[in-house]
Amino acid sequence: MRLRRRKDSAQDDQAKQVLKGMSDVAQEKNKKIEESGEAKAPDLKARRWDQGLEKPQLDYSEFFSEDVGQLPGLSIWQIENFVPTLVDDAFYGKFYEADCYIVLKTFLDENGSLSWEIYYWIGQEATLDKKACSAIHAVNLRNYLGAECRCIREEMGDESDEFLQVFDNDISYIEGGTASGFFTVEDTQYVTRLYRVYGKKNIKLEPVALKGTSLDPRFVFLLDHGLELFVWRGSRATLSSTTKARLFAEKINKNERKGKAEITLLCQGQESPEFWEVLGGQPEEIQPCVPDDFQPHKPKLYKVGLGLGYLELPQINYKLSVEHKKRLKADLMPEMRLLQSLLDTKNVYILDCWSDVFIWIGRKSSRLVRAAALKLSQELCGMLHRPKHAMVTRNLEGTECQVFKSKFKNWDDVLQVDYTRNAENVLQEGGLAGKVRKDAEKKDQMKADLTALFLPRQPPMPLSEAEQLMEEWNEDLDGMEGFVLEGKKFARLPEEEFGHFHTHDCYVFLCRYWVPVEYEEEEEKKKKTEGKEEEEGEEEEEEKQPEEDFQCIVYFWQGREASNMGWLTFTFSLQKKFESL
Image 1 (cartoon, rainbow, N blue to C red):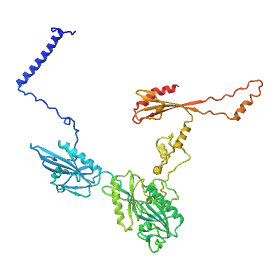
Image 2 (cartoon, rainbow, N blue to C red):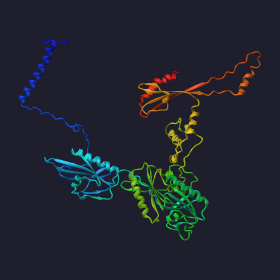
Image 3 (cartoon, rainbow, N blue to C red):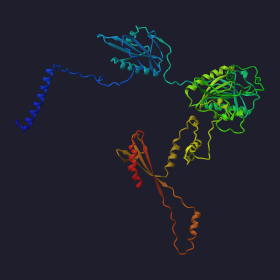
Image 4 (tube, rainbow, N blue to C red):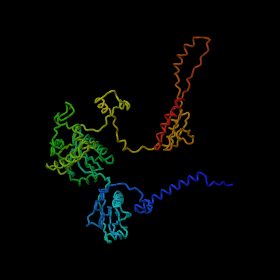
């Protein structure tokens, strides 16, 4: 049975009034539009999906000029150091094999409006940064022009016909290209040099000409040939000098060659062919060539500074005690006062050793002073008539070469370790304050020997040994319960899931360990029972054995991608329950 609503109900009357009011409003609006003479707005067409996207407001004026693409013609850019560089008209159609280019063709369409074609050409030997930048800047050019065309990729040797028509099928390839914008790792280039070793307590090295006639049977020589270090011992040289030269070569290998160099010890008359090949051939006879009254040149230390419009190069007289900030020892001779403490990290210095000119650059020195020091050192090296084997060597603070260090008194990088103190005493903060505390922290600061990073990796532990250690460590483990965070509460973790951890979860493990019982020694027990034997008839007291105790440890494990709410939930809920047990 279906119910029919009455036609003259109150609801129908109310609906009719609403519809009549809406129609009256629409009629009044149409009359106003007709009276004002305004035309009806045409129906808006739906925009495409890509037209509705909001484009970012980027500034491309740094890469492209304002008149780009405004006149019919051809424009080409070459990618250089991540940036497009405009190419001259004379080089159109000539592409380097190791470069990438952006080609823009501007023309008028059938309606007389500007239209564009954008290509990016990739060379066969181009690096990854050039390939990426050519595609990126091609899209930037399209956005800059407001063009709707595609950016077409063209590869060397596989160009499309449309691209070849742009150049009238006249393109040519040229070998080479610009350097990559990335920092390239190049093999270190070592300069082959020959040093004469002299000195008794602290050896020093004097550069000599790289030839076999420079050898002297009374001395030890060190031949630095990059990853090959030769220590040559003359027939009349002392054993101590040979040993010290060997140790010096070990320092060079460790600090400058990262342990990759091969050190070869040679005696006079037992040289290898490789040794003579480096020296340019074996001489007929090795004779003494160093004068008996040989005196090495005294090193001169200069400080590079900037004056008012000019450069300053004052000499530091290190023989005077006033030039030193720290108080010198009374027994230190003036000739031996060339110390490491003279070098300030905020300055740049030049050390002139006649056959060697060293530049020492402090880490906190300005760039302008560094550039001036490089120019001054070259001028200083060429001002005097020096040997042909003299050269300028640049040293940065903290990475000085061993030859430069040997010019100074007691320059040693050996770490000072106080074995009477442990790590906790060194790291704990004392009750000092102010400058005294800072000096104490600086003095007691622990130093790390980074050579362990370059040692061979330790072999992995065998499985049997790992299982044995696991059994020993878990010997006192009585039980373990696991919990995992699910939502806002920790739920009990099944035992079959122990050991499986997820990066998005947080886990809590409650472990119970038995504490071993400490029994008293037998002698102490006898002393306690002596007093009890005097009383007859009393019952013997049973020895009370200490009760076994246990200790609980809670472990909290949080995944790398888990929320920090896990720790807060554990702190305010589960931890309080464990403490109440």
